[in-house]
Image (cartoon, rainbow, N blue to C red; front, side, top):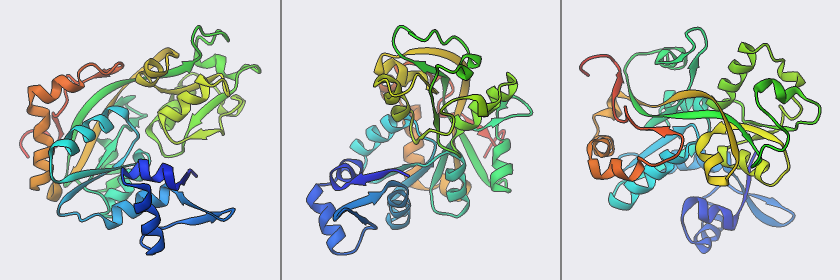
Length: 292
């Protein structure tokens, strides 16, 4: 559970810190007190955003944490009157909110273990219905983070079970956690033997920062964070990252305006140089097949 201070929340919501305290005083935002100071639970704040945003004027995206998606949202919000709110709560939790009608769309990367590929089987597994449109956002590389120079000589997943290696994991329900568990199973590695498997972070950046600051020796996540923090990276898998949109939302004006960005060369130019990403199929409808 991630706890935010008033200052951290003001940055997260991109509002003035005084506005945060005003919302607390007016009892309009959920908060707690720790040692006499006001604090906020990030998960509850994310849900509060989803429940209180005017849906007819906004887009609410819930699901997996991704830095390129955040960049896309920032570009959109800087140019459009309608705004996108983003709750990075994990792929499965995002699908649950979508099923409850609490989000406009969900961003996911869930591996089909039986087929060993990313496809739309999760739509039926978690949503149990077929009135959704799935848009390919991009592909991205996942692998192991280690410190610059790889001082512990970590060269494979099997090195994670060594006694001298401390690992940091991603949160339960995240697509990255599901992918890691699959790769461990494929390599006959018992997760219980990994020291730190139970240590969780809620984002790729926070995982990377643990390695950067020397608190742990290895983590698992996307290449771009390794590039940003100047960590070494061992690539293990290229995954697909998708948007899942109910058809009733897909045809809405704001959603269509958002999706139209992927047809604009000037916009695609702004996102093409993110390390560890491929935007070759960005904007492509991958489900349902054919016309929608």
